[in-house]
Amino acid sequence: MKYQIRGEKLANIPWEDKPAGCKEVVWRSSRNPVVGRYHIPSSNTIFNSAVVPFGGGFKGVFRCDSRIGKQQLHTGTSSDGIAWEIDDDPIRFTDGAYGSDKIAYGYDPRVTYIDGRYYVTWCNWFSGPTIGVAYTTDFIKYYQCENAFLPCNRNGVLFPEKINGKYAMLSRPSDLAHTAFGDIFYSESPDMVHWGCHRHAMAPGGGWSGMKIGAGPVPIMTSEGWLLVFHGVICTCNGYVYKMGAAILSGDEPWVVKHRAGPYLMAPCETYECVGEVPNVVFPCAMLADAETGRAAIYYGGADTVVCVAYCMIDELIDFIKANDIC
Ligand code: BMA
Image (cartoon, rainbow, N blue to C red; front, side, top):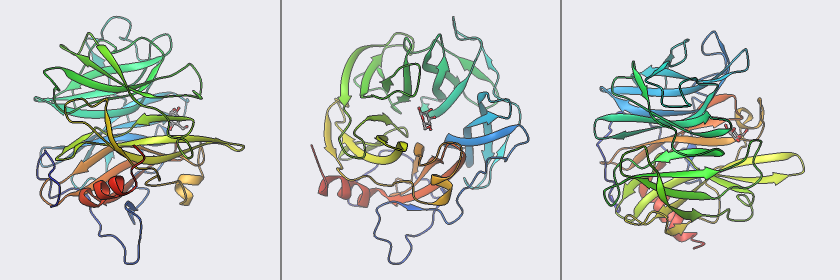
């Protein structure tokens, strides 16, 4: 590999070679969508979900919006990262922190492995949306912690290791509705309870990400810095359109953007991204990368309805970001 990934060898992540003639840096799984909207009896839609390697296979925290219309988090299990068994019952969190012991809703989860714990961050109700935090070691019992921030905030994404001795999180302050603005901020914490030293990290970029942006999968540490895949939104006369982009943040000061690709990586264009509960949405929430080969699988929601997978090579992605740098 041209660039190094700080992480595990993950030889068994989902993978398909780039189709002959494909000129994109990110290409879709031929098996999309990998989880359909009616995958479990209670679901209306399943999308924007997070996946991690676990016990030789994979675990996931899935956003399942129920047929009652409630947004909830459910555990999933898979041996290959493509075929998923998802619990029909939502996750029940124990030891709920003040004000967060009743989950009015839970959506857009990310899962971050840090020092023996799998932390789940999600958009949690707390008199408005904010960042819920919980951890599990076995994906059976989940312990809820204090909410990270005051409302309104969404897209809380933890870094997979402490930075300068502190836990570190990206988030996107928002409003109560379909927020028409949004920058990514960086915050740190000594204990996963008290968050501060907030830094501005990234503003909307104009064009396809001109209205708002939000962190996507857990960032991946590479020899160039933190590789961040994010979503960007443009407001059109027909509504919001969500696309996928990428940037590289400084390793020691991740609020400093070193490189940022001007063009998007992926726009909604397949039917399962353009037709559904909310048309024209690709929303990445997880990325698994094999440190040996540089293969990566990105999990994203399609049209707020289904779960999809796309692939890339980390070397190619970093070269793409650098070659199209708008920093
Ligand atoms: C955002 C979140 C996401 C969703 C997106 C598009 O505000 O609610 O869950 O995918 O809108 O509807």
